[in-house]
Image (cartoon, rainbow, N blue to C red; front, side, top):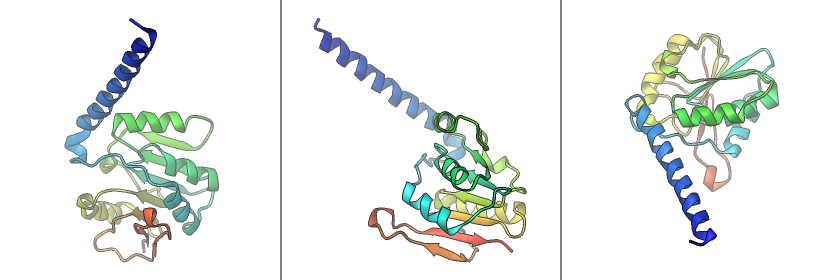
Length: 183
């Protein structure tokens, strides 16, 4: 058989194996996520939120469902704050750990954020689906300290009144970013 056929078979097999791993990583956490998939927050939205929510080096940002950790890395790079991300999808968790490797103040936990203690968080970021936002609102009210800031990409928190709603001018990234200040 020609070499190019073997190369094609190996590449196709590798891509198929990666797809199987992706599907398995979603299936493993399906009972917890209830079908929510890992979706990256755009760099434009991250930049907008970082500009709108200044932080100090002694503060802590928590990302609920941190995916590949890009929010954690960008916030840590800009402000030098301690960042903690929670991710239960094994593939996204490994990706976040790999991309965030090095001497920094980024912690990524393979843990369900519903069980996390958020009492030390100064800023909480989330890009979660509407079906979990009501339950999340209760967790945030009960677990966050007064003065904490919550940033929600795309979906609002029921019962909360945003102090600011950002919309990027680009139509591709025009979904709202809600910023809440807890009292």
